Amino acid sequence: MTTLSQNGSLLAGSLRRRRLPKALPPLLGVAALGVSAAGILGTGAGGWVLTVVVAAVLFVLATLIVSGAVEGGRRARDRVATIAVYGAFILALIPLGSVVATLLAKGTGRIDAEFFYHSMNNITALDSGGGAYHAIIGTLQQVGIAAVLAIPLGLAAAVYIVEYGRGRLTTVIRFFVDVMTGIPSIVAGLFVLAFWVLIVTPVFNHGRPGYSGFAAALALTVLMLPTIVRSAEEMLRLVPQALREGSYALGVPKWKTIMRVVLPTAAPGIVTGVMLSIARAAGETAPVLLVAGGTPAINFNPFSGNQESLSYFVYEQAGAASQFAPGRAWTAALTLIAIVAILTIAAKLLARRSTIGR
Amino acid sequence: MNMAKRVEAVDVTAYYGSFKAIDSITMTIEPKSVTALIGPSGCGKSTFLRSINRMHEVTPGAKVQGKLMIDAEDIYDPRVDVTAVRRAIGMVFQRPNPFPTMSIYDNVVAGLRLNGVRKKSTLDDAAESSLRAAHLWGEVSDRLKRPGGGLSGGQQQRLCIARAIAVEPQVLLMDEPCSALDPISTLAIEDLIGELKDRYTVVIVTHNMQQAARVSDRTAFFSIESTGDPGRLVEFDDTTKIFQNPGEKKTEDYITGRFG
Ligand SMILES: Nc1ncnc2c1ncn2[C@@H]1O[C@H](COP(=O)(O)OP(=O)(O)O)[C@@H](O)[C@H]1O
Ligand SMILES: [Mg+2]
Image 1 (tube, each protein chain N blue to C red):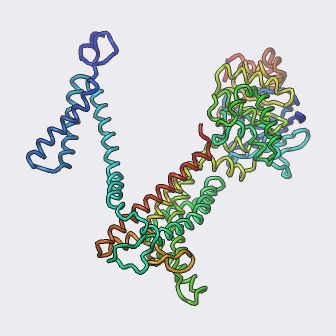
Image 2 (image 1 turned 60 degrees about the vertical axis):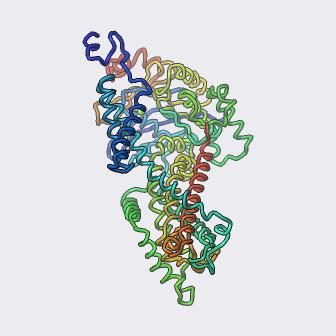
Image 3 (image 1 turned 30 degrees about the horizontal axis):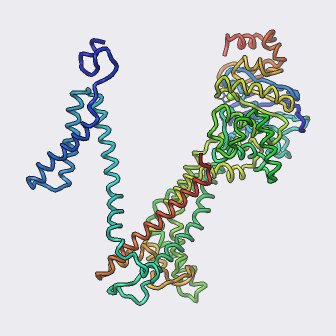
């Protein structure tokens, strides 16, 4: 007892340690920022980035010294680790925060009726009006078709790998799924261009290549499949074997066990993976550029004729030499993000409702 | 009401891949009785139990040889439908495994519903009578729509028992059903087993000797020579005889705690 109390980290005869007052660490932080600002901004030695970095270093040093003197080394290291974890968290949030802030700052300018109800038909880049209605339709149709194709295929492949797969075939499938994961979107676009647009469609189209939203959807399907298979596979593997056995023991056949017990249990995770793949597909530009061709006009038919998409619209407008085009690009980007966010939230809510709440 | 059935194992040998886990088990389990399987860890109690309802073959590479007759019908006959066997022979596992996406009610009627029963009144009746039989009705009747995972461990295990008996099996297999439970829940389940034998043939694996003595009419003692050897049936007799006057030295050593 006495030996312990001598090093100052324990009060004599007690298990309670001396602690820094609650208000002190934040005060240290403010002080570090003040000193750093005075030293760097005050003298003009650097900008605010350097100020923040130096303030962070000063804050860590001050915490180490003050806490080390009062509370002992272990507490001091604990405090520094806490600062490091929060710091990493804030750093990770900066890109996200800045993207959202930039989009909101620049993308709200063209949120008006014309933008959402009109296309760019007969409007040049130099004109002020115009809208992305045709692009919104294109994105929704292309991503929708791609989802309809990729989700059942991807889930079926994952179920096969996890529930039925034994031996060679499974290994081969998993290998190709891995390879597909690494396919750049431009290659997926080129594949559909070479195969579907230039070889298959001319047969039904008097020898002319058939650019269409559906071709873009095919390319997006190729891109979505591996993400869906892989994430669904991981989620299915997480379903405890005990649940499958519990179902088998009731005399439930395997396929029904998968449909009614395994898939619902894995549903929330699967939905997350599917939404990630949809979000990625919605943002793809290259395949749309190659096989849907793009158009300034509204085309409701994804199976025939060129179609636009939001990401392609952003690409076009961002590159156009006009004072009005960037505004259209920003608002289209904001619209795209909003669509993805709404879809994700809706899917999560649905997944949560299918598993029962407390 | 369904009929409890006799289980007759004849030279049942079970493998995991090339590893022989149990060797030539021959025993007859009488209807409307409780039979306890005891023995040291790894002697093949679970393996034998799982070969009674053809759950053994769920493990990749596992296979069973020999005959297993349920009232003179060999369940390993190639013409037999596995799902029908499992419906007739219910199973309760060591760890409670209610379906997490289903409510208490849905858990209980899962076996009926997934086997095609749709009629609401049939399901309601089955849910209530099974939960009553599992001594859980009083605790959950006002929250049948809540998730089964929200119950305590003992309640979850009784929910799993209710789920197993809702399909009206003829035999009920229980693999250490109380080993994850507290003493009070254990007592509740032991009481329940005493009642279940009026209607079912019950086979229970247990590590707890007092439990075997309390709940069973007959006891089978399994053992292995050494690790890597297959498990064998050493002695199978009335529970009182096994615990008071065992015929084999090995049984006596195990029961008195000198071995295993
Ligand atoms: N899934 C499995 N794969 C391979 N060996 C297994 C498996 N399950 C059990 N075994 C082996 O089979 C033997 C019997 O196991 P088990 O029936 O679980 O014994 P008990 O239930 O009596 O403890 C043990 O040697 C065990 O290691
Ligand atoms: Mg066991």
